[in-house]
Length: 394
Image (cartoon, rainbow, N blue to C red; front, side):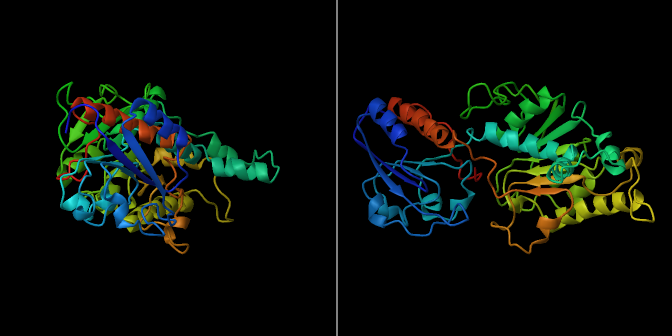
């Protein structure tokens, strides 16, 4: 697949306007590359388009950049030699004949999402722990809200110093969240499917936004690994205060976390964040765990007249037998879009956003940066980065 420049046809199929400045940049550096752009309208679900792409458009393409649109069959793309996805994962195309029946190299945009998703992770976690909904309601009501209940909550806000972040899936996103958490004084522990026992194995060999992430894997105080329940439970039982779910969705990670796992996390009444895929969580079990915590706190910190004790958080800290999870932040759900009548919307202490944590002004440019790195490597006959291992599903 190596060698010098030769005529290439890059087909770009994306759900937004043509990034002309990026195309000009590619043409300046790679004048032998012809670029064809096709805009595809999508539904509310990012992977589903409102229209089909004519199969003949793929016939002469040697390179393809896409979110989810692929040739219908291998016969429709006889010259295709590389497909780059603008997403971090490829589970949404895992049943495509191009995925299952060809060996065309697939690369992802993994590595570009770390900065903006890490900010979302910290934003939502702090919004929950600092009772931002309460503060925002005071402002809307023009209240200088130093009432008894409010002060009881705010006087007992726990900062992040000394708390433990467990990162389930220490990839590019997990590494950037780990970096920020470490700067806030947290202890970070990591979990990966395969062992990371040597300095080389702990390194990030994918695309890294400069100045971000954990290139050498230096932030975790401990690494855990494995692919069975026993290994996972050993990790979850390490006094985790905040669990970040950032593993790819595969057959092995479907409903990876359910009732049993949430019971382990309830030891610290952990806060759970999911930025991966909704199907990794048993959503009903999560809702039950959130209600269990909320019910206990409400019942044990309210007076007969319906008012609250002045210091409910103090009681929480004093009682180590409280069931359930303190809260959750979910940028992904099952299904998507989440139906208006789904009970997840009203789950206590749960923040739900519509799969937007990775969006930002730099998103498109960084997607193409990964592709351009590989275009350079391809022309030099070097190994590509962010290549999908079909046998693993990521």
